[in-house]
Length: 191
Image (cartoon, rainbow, N blue to C red; front, top):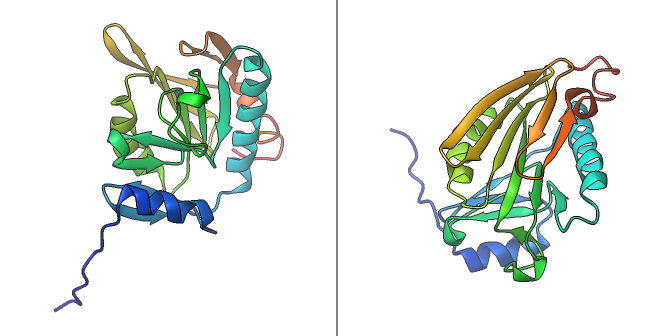
């Protein structure tokens, strides 16, 4: 027979307090914390490309881009995730703290072998429950492929992009090329 272990649940307040001083980031799901792992070179290049491209275009619009150190608060504080990129267009003074966003319009997850299934199922469904969210992107680091889920008045639509195509963001009213997302990644032989 296997070894039995009791799982201890922690409160949202205790999680947020501990997370501020933690050396390793943790996501929080219904009282359970999950340590976050490191990212590959391709993952970091893609994230940097997205932050630079979107950040420069959004400057002065009232929207802000945050990278993987900003949590998204979901389900009345029962879940906190660290997406690879988040764009919010509300007044930051209305957020519960300096470390979380609660009303993002765009969320990007860069897929890695250890997180892909969570990003494609659990996070997809949880993020889609956010009334503010309009675009959710899943970006492959193994090939030039982006999956986009976009909310409109009829629900969610799904589209894929590859090669030299351009991705339209309904959430922020702009377009970004696949070449912008994968710059330097493609040049370095990845993906």
